[in-house]
Structures are given as structure tokens and as C-alpha cells.
Length: 77
Image 1 (tube, rainbow, N blue to C red):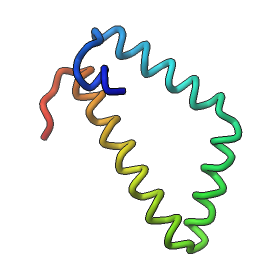
Image 2 (image 1 turned 180 degrees about the vertical axis):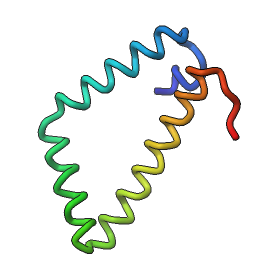
Image 3 (image 1 turned 90 degrees about the vertical axis):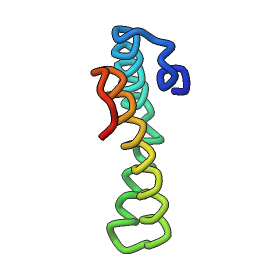
Image 4 (image 1 turned 60 degrees about the horizontal axis):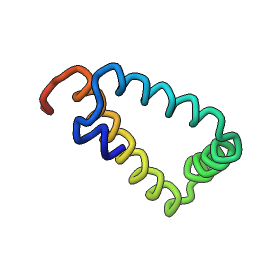
């Protein structure tokens, strides 16, 4: 979330936002089913899907790192 990255939320609000997003993610049954299917295809050797998932997961990891750095008031590195 752009507003979280820009520091527009307090630490408590960031924690609440993370909690809401996790709950929302678990409730997206069809999306989750599709993710599992795509992951299975990547594991079975579909290189195109594998590369797309790698890019997507790297973005997720980067965003999560930024949130945690902001949450714990740490500098990157």
C-alpha cells in the first residue's frame, strides 16, 4: 500500500492494516486456488509461469521487507 510506504500510518495502524490484508487474502478462495494451480504448474516445469511467479514473489518479498522496516523503524541493509 502506497500510503503505508510513505509513512502515513502509525505503527499500530500498520499492524492493523497487515492484519486486515492477511484476513482478506485468506478469504480469497478462488484466487488462492489459482495460485496453488499456478505454483503446481511452475513446479512441474512450466518455465514461463515459473518466471512470472518469481517476479511476483520478489515484489511481495520486497513490499513485506519495506513494511517490516517501517514497522520496526529499521533502515534497509
